[in-house]
Image 1 (cartoon, rainbow, N blue to C red):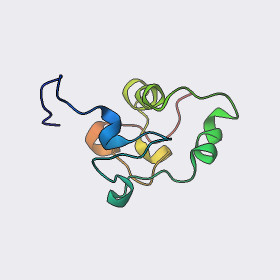
Image 2 (cartoon, rainbow, N blue to C red; image 1 turned 30 degrees about the vertical axis):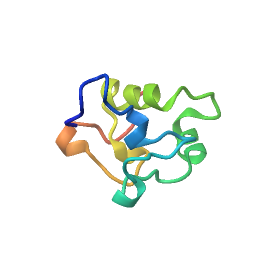
Image 3 (cartoon, helix red, strand yellow; image 1 turned 180 degrees about the vertical axis):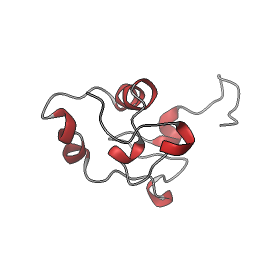
Length: 90
C-alpha cells in the first residue's frame, strides 16, 4: 500500500469506506468494486437474518480464514490471484 509511518498513515476506512461512511480517498464503486446487491440481500443468502459482525471481521473471516472468493458477494473475482474458492464451505 506504500503508506506513511503508522503515526501518519490513513485509517483503512479513508480508502475503503464503511457501510455508513463513504471513502474519502478513492471511489471503489467507480473502479468496479461493488456488491452484487444490497448488503441486506447478499448476506442473507448464506447467513439468514442473523446479526452480522463488523465489516472488517466479516471480511477477514470470509477471505483470510475461509478463503472464499470475492465473487460470492461482489461483482468481481480474485480467486486465481489469491487462491480463493468459489463456493461456500460448510
